[in-house]
Image (cartoon, rainbow, N blue to C red; front, side):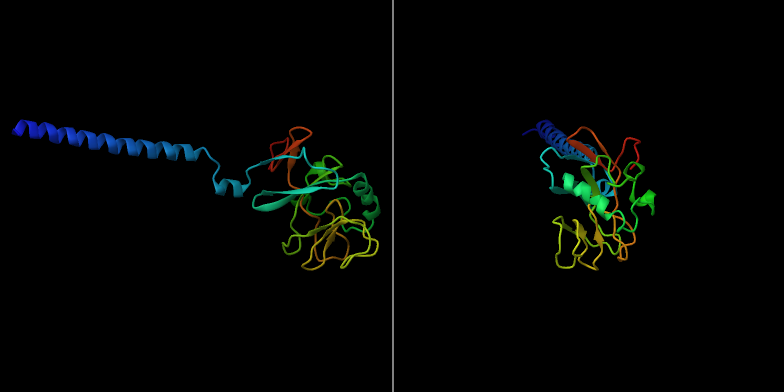
Length: 202
């Protein structure tokens, strides 16, 4: 093979290698660009709004979704559950949600049922005492660790704090505040967004 052909062959090999390397870098860059458009785990943890479909939620049922690394309960209350709030008004420590409202209760939930719609409760499922997760105790009546006149609600098994069907803490319990109602809004009758409201506040 002549020297000229050897040089041409060397150049061709170098050109092919350079193009191949360039294509790998291009693919890698494209992958990096695509990934930047996806919400990172850090962004989700920081509080990216969560859209929830509640079309299959039946009265008396509750579903749990994650928002900011916390469990958020969505409970579709029955007429009986809503009516029980009248029974617990005088037994809860903060019936009108006046304690720390900026942190625990948006203005549109500062009512007896602590919600936008009376039948739908949206609450963070974390006890305001030491951060345990309460259990649902929806069946009324005497039960272990609950009073004989129990009307239904939530029980924190760690230190015995109890909450009614609106997440309002009962008097003389370790938990200092009602369960948090996160900012939320309805996109339709069957879809809601947790972590954002109509004012754009999170």
